[in-house]
Length: 338
Image 1 (cartoon, helix red, strand yellow):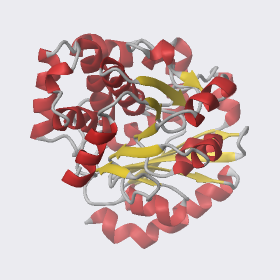
Image 2: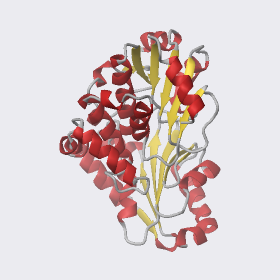
Image 3: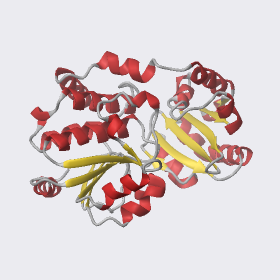
């Protein structure tokens, strides 16, 4: 965050404010962890703050301190709208385009609040008056830690905040194995542990609470995997019928796409998941090395994200989507093999 925006934020927070904190639709560990950590910080500073999520989020994240206070825009619509409409400040975390909040975008666009963006994705839009955008950061949670430190309040980080921030960093870095994990990330983690973050317990709550149906769904996904060795690519498909068969719950497919990258020689992994309610296939892209799935998703599948992790969508049938996807691979063969 540049000095001008930092000073503007300090001035904005110098007196008690009504604040709404917003994660993206289908929030993940980084989105929930960062919003909760910021919520604790702002409450402790004397502000009136609320988190409004565009929709529900996975059960394995609901243990985090303060999670029971998060408003679901879909289920608690009137209360959620009131929080946004009455806010002096709106913080948007872990996304940089209002299209990422789904049906909630209209409510945000009509708000007269001062918008503050904290995000680490590429190509931010310009809706926020105060921006903290840094694509080199491992996660938005790491950015929240740095932001609190820049505001001069590092010593105010409580154990509750530390656990929330640790969770987001851990999940967004694939338990610290992704390339965005830097030496600074590890220094932040060390400080969070000193402040009370319980790493082993957090890992257990996130990764070791599977239901039998989720593991059966994983088995189905792996059985569906197609390996295209010529293009160092692997993809998985999951139909709505398969999701229903294994009693899919929100968050159950989290991390499935990464299994493709565990194969020797595979640099590009994709999962296509049908969502009949929205009439689309949701797509997750992952890569290793210099192949930019952000560019690939933006150019071909109405999406984007990071160099090695991005999302997209398709409005076509699975057969048409896969045919289109595979037709693109020869165009990227040299990049995938470099």
